[in-house]
Image (cartoon, rainbow, N blue to C red; front, side):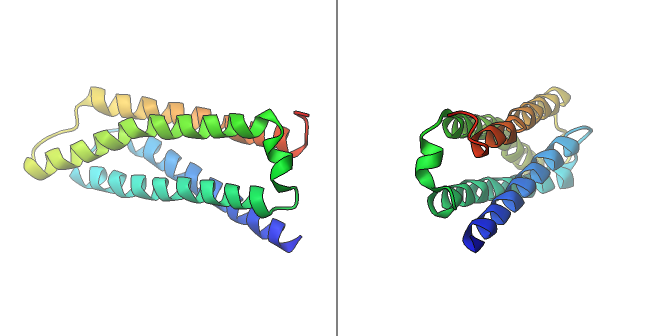
Length: 150
């Protein structure tokens, strides 16, 4: 029982971190970005990746070693829906990540360069889409954990 509680706690912490980094990126892209902000965005994006990997790892550990066991999770549709939504969020996150890297390189080449407003808005739009899709995952998790999909 203790193992299940510890795994649940670690999974929740990883989820909170993931959302905090997603929100941070969305907030940072609200306005004009200078070189320092773009460098910080890159670091936040790396932490975002780390948090996503932690969510995945703790979720797998929870499924394998938690109180309910893999058969509970793998026998119903919510786990597959959660995985699809998680992968979709990850796929959408590639676009902003590529932009952040390109922006950093542009600033390294030319200190006077500015992030085009349309690109910033496009990155923010992608980040907001990620957040809204990711917000559906806990809903599916509640359905799954209560056994409502059986």
